[in-house]
Length: 355
Ligand code: ATP
Ligand code: FE
Image (cartoon, rainbow, N blue to C red):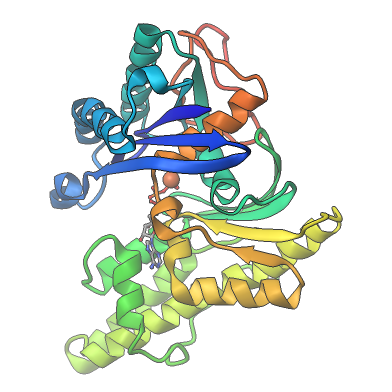
């Protein structure tokens, strides 16, 4: 089975070819065209600019993905496209492009939930067996899921306000560091002391897997203002301490809540217990190390896919499409772009279905 995947739900236009042969998936190509510079002047993703850029770049990304894979459209068995959740203009651009190719080439079309794409990545990279525990931790999301199958997820809990990636991005702004904030804060934290500032660990005193990160950002703001008032500026060394302490607080919350999620997951008695993390924040080595340690303590295999497959890409969409296709999923020309699409509603949204 050879699938083309398309992704355009946020600020990355992506196309990829994934082939499944003898039960082993292989990424033949994965093209990602970012839009960071386009949105940089505005300090955030501008939906209208994103949609236009997707519409301009999708065709080129598809051509590039086919050419890098060394195949033609006639070699494809299907097309998978992100049908949501995300910025509606971008998702529509992708869905329209996929419909056009599917109709023109007479190929099956499979709509994919972007979050399912992230959540199924460890099966593409590490062939994890169901059920496995998943922590999806990105710029827009933070949730624990048990993946029972390609369309079957149980949500154990998640953030009640900001996502950690968003918190890292805001922290970088407060520290006058460049965007995306995660890598910048992590680099700065390397020379800092994670114990220098006592930031809160929100919701750790409450049972369950829900998390909160917005208070942490406020605490960082206050600490920064106090430092600036004392020193008349933000000395480099103190900034490193602030970043290290902030990162440690995020890591501590994620690790402790992972311990609880793992305990819950293990009651399902999985034959091959495994815990995977995905999303851009999974790139953070302090967070990764913490998650790895707690997994080892609980006798669960830990997996973190390579960074390029943790952030938005189309290989995960092609793969999720293949998994759905193998279950018999097919979408028609009535496949609809959906800005909101919770993971527990797994069927792709259809035009005129009233959903
Ligand atoms: P979503 O997939 O939820 O719509 P997104 O596309 O913004 O959100 P990703 O592309 O998966 O998310 O990840 C981007 C986020 O990951 C950014 O917020 C970025 O700051 C964060 N991030 C990237 N690298 C690191 C790092 N080393 N440490 C912490 N955060 C990081
Ligand atoms: Fe994403």
